[in-house]
Length: 74
Image (cartoon, rainbow, N blue to C red; front, top):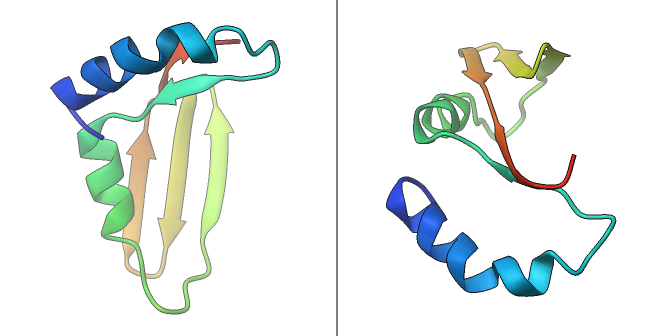
């Protein structure tokens, strides 16, 4: 999902999912997921670094930064 579709999906599923105590629902911005998709290869060694709420992925074909936001959970 991306853009407005996230809001629609969350609105439809929020009530059911908020009953689960051990669940975290994250929203990944469209730009970050597009950059991550560009890294995909049949065989792909990736490096991942998580710091200060940001996720950095890098591979042979480039890098991607994703700054997720929490919809529910910690």
